[in-house]
Amino acid sequence: MITLKDVTKKYGKFTAVDNLNLEIEEGDSFGFLGPNGAGKTTTILMAVGILRPTYGEIKVFDKDIRREIEIKKRIGVVSEQQYLYNNMTAYEYLNFFAELYDVDSDRVNEILDYMRLSDVKNKLLKEYSKGMRQKISVARAVLHDPDILILDEPAYGLDPKGVK
Figure 1 (cartoon, rainbow, N blue to C red):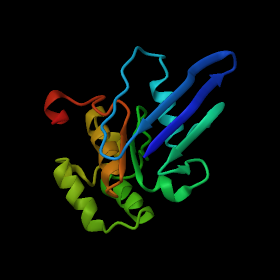
Figure 2 (figure 1 turned 60 degrees about the vertical axis):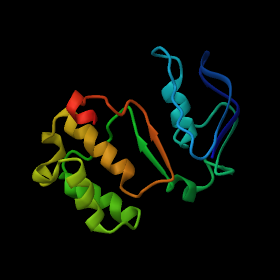
Figure 3 (figure 1 turned 90 degrees about the horizontal axis):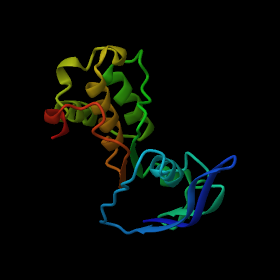
Figure 4 (figure 1 turned 45 degrees about the vertical axis):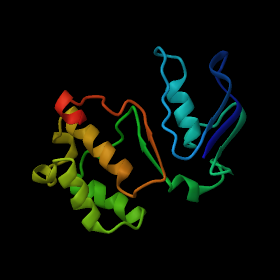
């Protein structure tokens, strides 16, 4: 499903990822472990087509992730950074993405229920706690039932009860 071949990412003279070869097959669960600055997030950002590798090739479903927009629609991502539209409510935010993915708005309510956010779905996202914002990020990532789910620090900001 995901193949990285001889992938290197440089930022000026600093090499963040050096000649990485990796193959993740359908059904696999895979995790990166390493210290801060080891290139974990950089690798994830390249694998989903947000960053371009300096060298090497990345394929998802045997297609070049940078050139195939349809492939990106099959991926759900929870990023280390929370990219939320703060002046939208949770319902508006998720419904916006539901429309992009051609997902029924009933799915938005289903996800909000599952994430235990239905009672605050009409609050602006800027009023949410860090943990609640992370739940919305997870909800957005799974909203369209993606074939691949990529999680970068998914429990960031969640209390132990919220991680369940």
